[in-house]
Amino acid sequence: MAAPKPRVKVPKKASKGEVITIKTLISHPMESGQRKDKKGEVIPRQIINKFTCEYNGQVVFSCDLEPAVSANPYLEFNAKVEDSGTFKFTWLDDDGSTYSTENKLTVE
Amino acid sequence: MTLTRREALGLTAGAAAFLTLAPRIAFAAAEETEAAIKAFTGGATPASGKVSLDTPEIAENGNTVPVGVSVESPMTADNYVESVMILADGNPAPGVATFHFTAMSGIAEAKTRIRLAKTQNVIAIAKMSDGSTFMDKKEVKVTIGGCGG
Image (cartoon, rainbow over all chains, first blue to last red; front, side):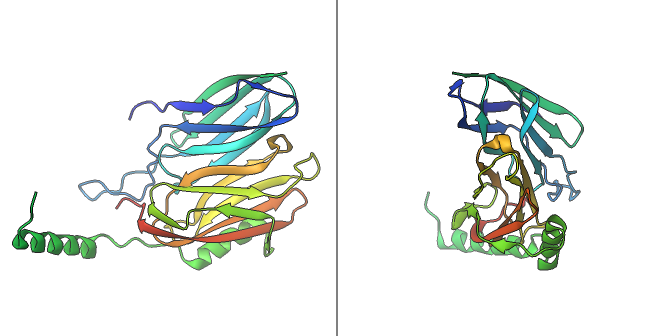
């Protein structure tokens, strides 16, 4: 499996108090644990089970994911911004690894 | 490519055999969904209204069904939507995802893409910061199930 690659779409600029829309996607097979391989053995579950979005260290939005979320999990949500700062996005894998990315936002 | 009558018959028979032999997957019963709702609301029966689910009426591919949910709320520090749980009552396990919002979310609205094994109900339950719960339910018709197998 190629290393999961997070992709995030956040506006670069916003006005004070504006509600912005954030779109995130990470490449990940989200193996459900329901499928079987050619030998008839169950392919073990491996999914992204938690996603968190923080702004300047404060949690804005988080999500618990189950195997019923599609491969390459896509999430769209909103954030109300008052000051300039940095968004930090973190994905937590079943195997314990975390994937994260950051985005700067300027509030005018 | 043109199919002869013989080839066409052979293909149909093969497809039929595959469908009957495909492993039967145990699907979540309605009770399991009920239990998941109870566990989330703390025993209360969620009221209708406030929550709205946005799902397609017919999903051609059950592997990626776009689902959106929005909840009416002022989203202030003392009155906001805490979390929204998405359930699918015909999947092997009813749980799909739980969104956790904060006052910083601005609007209690989120979208994702989910797997649906067959035609079934998608349920969204919202829990407000004061503990009250609201529910919405939509049926999605699935043409090709999304469970591998």
